[in-house]
Length: 141
Image (spheres, rainbow, N blue to C red):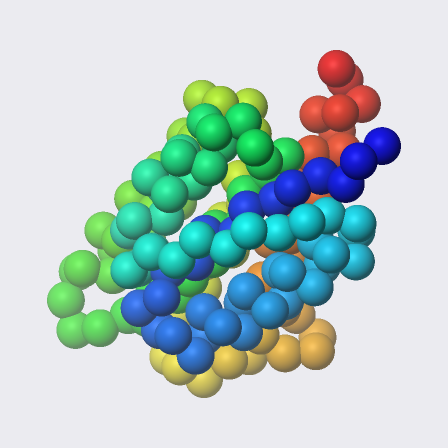
């Protein structure tokens, strides 16, 4: 069987966090034998549309959506988090292509960094979720 291709859509608003998320997801996909393409978008709000483009292209067995939203002083955080999560979920349900929500939704930068460490890495977790769902999809076809 030829190796599968996976897409990583990365919201780059917090560039340093995005780099760490992408590195974790990429290493997990590649360890599973997959090939990876990375697509950058400005932030988490743009992830659902990027995931839709990737899913509808027919090129990818799954999409890991990665980024970070850190709470500020306004309700902007709530809107971005809700729309990103709902949009990514909708892409999965509408296309049947697994799309993982690997977006850090945290109160502080310290909380974000804690989710990119050796105990728990959100980028790796997102890629593992995509791999598991892609395997399930293959087993049922």
